[in-house]
Length: 330
Image (cartoon, rainbow, N blue to C red):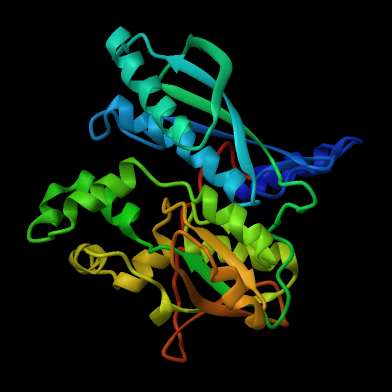
C-alpha cells in the first residue's frame, strides 16, 4: 500500500509551483508571495480514522478540527486570521441541530481565543462524519515563515511543552482499564480530545531565531526525521531528554513500551519541534508561554534520525503516525 508520504511525493511530482506561491507542497502550509506573506493550510478529519464518535463528543471533534489547522500555521510562525470549514454529514448516525451547535460552538470558542474568523465553507452528505478545515494566516511584516528546511549542523533540536499525553490518552479511551491508578487519566483523555495549538509560541519563535520548525502531529521522531530530510542533515534525538507528560509512563508500561518511546513516537501532541543555534537558545526561550526543551542536535551527515538513550543507540521501530492509503505502490 502507498504511504501518506509516497502519495504526497507523487502529487508533488505532478504539480507545478507557479507565480504567486513562494512555498508549495512539502511544508506544514503553503506560503503565498508578499510582505507580509500569507500562509494557507488544510487538514481533513474523518470519523473512524482521526476520531471516534464513541469516545469523542461533537464539541471535542469541532475543537480538534480547528486546532490541528491552527497548529500547522503556528509551525511557520503565523498569526491565523480565518478558517473555512467543509462539513460532510452521514445519513447513518446523523448529527441533529443540537449537535451542529456543539460542533461549531467549540470551533468558535477556540477561534475566538486566537482572533480567528470562521469565514465560510460547505456542507454536504458523506458516508461518515468528515470535517475539512482550511486555515489562513499572515506573517508579521518583515518576518519570514519558518520552514522545516532551515536546520543547519550545530543547531539544537528542541520541543515545546510535554509529549505523549495525547497518545496515552487515546490508549486510555480505547481501553479504560489502562487508566486504573493513573491520577492524570482525565488530563490524558483531554489531551487526545482537545489539543492546544501553540500559536503564540510559534509567532515568538519565528522572531526569536528559530531556523526550522514544524508541529509535532505525527510524533517527535517522525517529524524530526522530516526536518532532517527537508534540511539535508542528520538529527540526533536523546530520549532521556524528551519531556514526558505526567501519566504517560504508567500507561506506556501497561502496554509494554518505555515512556520516552511512547512520548517520542505516539503523535497527536501538536507541540512545536524547533531547531535553534546554541547561542540563540536563551533568545528563543525568552517570553515563550510554554517551556522549550532541548532534546537533541543537528549534525552533518545523511538525512536521517538517530535515537539514543544515555549515549547508546535505540531502535525505535515505528517512528510515528503515518497513514497507509490507496493501492499497492507501482
